[in-house]
Length: 172
Length: 420
Image (cartoon, rainbow over all chains, first blue to last red):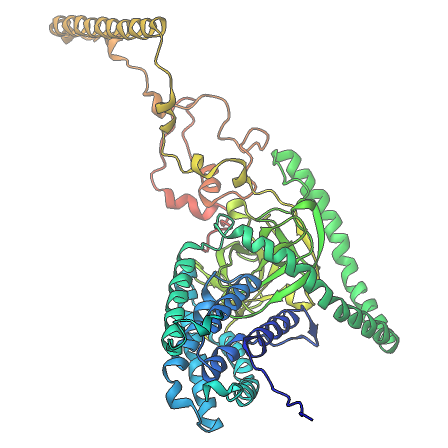
């Protein structure tokens, strides 16, 4: 009798589409106007986590396109200049894609340092773009208040990398 | 035959290269979007924004509903625990506010009387539309909210939004069911304000932090810590006198405003259906150069041209006759001068010229202080006040300029805008 062997298929749906939808849902959830004891919900830029993890998992054409779409939706939801967050996410993706050979197999601490550097670069770029468009520099303290919760999302990015990096035997 | 079984079976596309090319193409697209999007009602992507907001609004409303229920439940429980202390606080507040109420009634009466006497046309009452905040963005680059009232209920772009404490923001986009409100703390928000104590003007400019900056402040000492900040109404975008906050010093030393609207949650708001008078006329008409309408005039008819030519000929003839009379009078004066050596010189009538028209004023008491015939100005400027104190001679026809204008200044009342 022939035994059935369970084969796990890890395709773009698993590591691109579903995380993108989860990211979008959490973004909308955190945009709920809640104020308890004078405090609001944190508002990290959650897709930055995906922009860091996806090129490390596997370079693909779908990833940048979905990131662009997520960034544009984020721009519309936050009433930002159209293309601002898409550009920031693509900048992270491009940097990580270029340094992929160096980052593969590195320790978690190195990955976090790279994640922090990439996020800081993206936020700096967004800050410069908004300053140019509005001719008014946004508050640095407010910027830090968004950078910190975004950096705290690194464990989720690390978990995604650990789970999907070797998911498809064709790319080992 | 499957695709992989064909001649392309052995073709391997480098993944990194294709991904990099995709990133490059997407970056170019994003840059073009950034350049073409003006983030305004005239933006070509405004329908897309409205469509996404129309979908995201109800979704945000669903997420916000449990939070609202939880808030109501916690308020319900808290009312039981804090009823006594709140009752005492409210009683003290009521006792403090009762004299203010009496003063407000008296001042309202006096103000209405002044408005009638001075002929001031007060601003009409502004209709309100209550709305609920359903989606919030709080990042450093944008501070905006979605409201669950849109153009179907009369909300228009530019309408100011207030809560029970003060100004919250302005509507910057509408769709039939939802509207987008830009908070006063947004980096793109600029609101003309006045300082209540000194009537000095400034621009309230958001920078993504909780306390917007005061820019373009003029004068020394025109603002102090704790000064009340109101909307000035300059530009017609906002009604005058909407409370905004109090002045404070930021940690960077700049003047900032502690917003009244931060005293409570911005959940339910009121949209002021205020009509900006700038919307009554097209921007192109306002920005048109002077006499631009002359280009649109039709050509004169033959009859009109004849009338114009005839009037010009008459004026030329009258001018020539006046020159001739003046020359005749000058000749007569020259002829009579040798006879003027007598004891009683005669002054010719032609030398008594009338006073120049520019230096005469009509006899009616334009310069008197009667408020019934003076042009009504709600806030007289320093120049207007000092003009009433200008001395003039008793002649009913000729006004002599004062020899030293500064001497009249101390007698004038200080100008409200004198700090600038």
